[in-house]
Length: 89
Image (cartoon, rainbow, N blue to C red; front, side, top):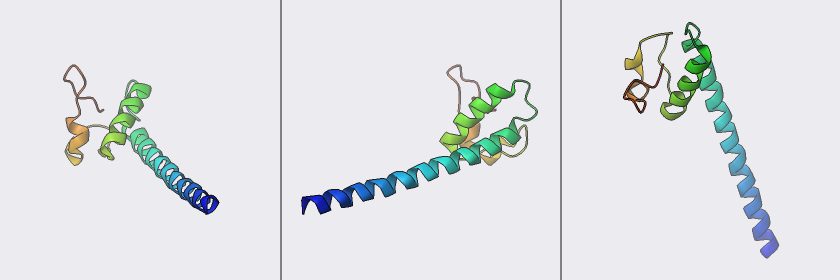
């Protein structure tokens, strides 16, 4: 009986971890593509991609275009750095 319970628990844990990994990969693909489009005209592309990625993961959205349009994503728009400046490009 204990072996059956342990096997069931192990199978359940494996299924849950697989779905979590897929969700994480989907999020990174979504953010990566959106941030690449957003930062393509930035003067410091690697910094833009870094902060856009951070903002995208927290907000689950990135404004369209390469500049502006932050009204499309209030969370992205309102995120601030420790100095009080906009964090998201």
